[in-house]
Image 1 (tube, one colour):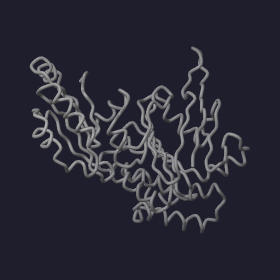
Image 2 (cartoon, one colour):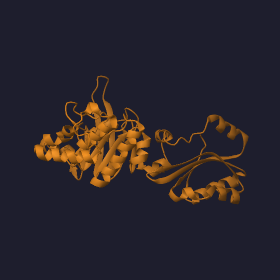
Image 3 (cartoon, rainbow, N blue to C red):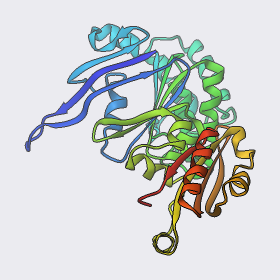
Image 4 (tube, rainbow, N blue to C red):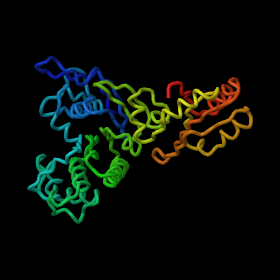
Length: 340
């Protein structure tokens, strides 16, 4: 269990104090992949660097497995950090070392014998799918391969927690997909907890169990990935989701519909088995309304179907309201779009 309480980071600057993280509270469960998403400058990288105290908090506490890292001595903190692996955006590999020696480097620092550290490094290189590249140098690797080396290196000390700081942001889509699949497999095989920093909602959708949205140093929304996609609360979250599932209608269509007819526009979200049910057909037959489908999409979030419809419901206003009540009674998330 990771528990962050009242975490604050203030930087001193000539123009005055800059509060990068503001009284932040967060809990991450053992074994989950927890995503933290936000725009540039939101405080994501500052936060993740504080989780292993590469950045020292101004105030607050960071508890990992009931150990408050902020209270540890330098010696004890170095020991605690060995159980926290970190994957970097730009790989941070040593150009003069082979893949094998890059992966073995943390064990060398920890004082592990050469025989043991090379054996462990070979096992990790095989784990990340680079068994045939152990004698290559970073300059001879693709971006995805370099990140696999970074992941293997982060696992060298058998960490309980893996921190990923924008690990896929410099990769092409195919490499990003393969790295996310690798992280998901490693989580299962090694029973790791992963905290993943990103500015890409597609990454959150593909791999995370829960997510927190951070803006200007504060968490403005958090919850399961399903809940966040189905019912985003803040404009920033909706903006991130629209990059993955864009259900915004062209303004001209919205203006025309609002001027031409009585009724309501609604966004309906379906999860799981509900995506297979004929709700719209039932609604039209039993509530005497016309349902014009303006937008429709079915996607998957971690293998579970997730669907979105935008409907233009026309007819007697009482019938329209009753039809909306019906959709809600079926457990669907329904949002009336007053300000599309």
